[in-house]
Image 1 (cartoon, rainbow, N blue to C red):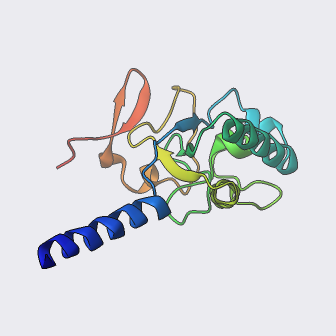
Image 2: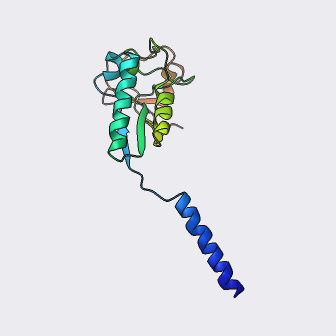
Image 3: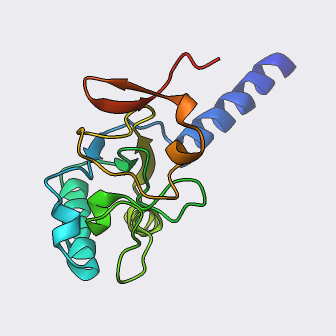
Length: 162
């Protein structure tokens, strides 16, 4: 009798816990930041409105997780002491947006206000996308060029660095 009662109580507790925090699917969408300098052409308010409209549309489509590209080419869509500001955001590598804002923090806040998860996506190897690309003075390449390799006239982090 005691074992049956204990099993019954444990089962009710498990069912209650599931009802409070049911498992759900991961229905994610990727928002990239490398798109013909779209972000650099727009001002901060336009970029915020664009991202808000994307989130609202995705939320209404049933998306519950956003994968936001925050480090497209060894640069950052957030304030960083290690990586320069992204040229895809400001139009020039290493240059902070004219109106100070942190796109990553903005996306965290906007996603969470909609009950969505935010996952930061980064490109771990790509540094440049063309042979003509100039890296800003504060880029790690200038301090440690031995950490990089050139392939197909593009610069990458060396994956097999000793």
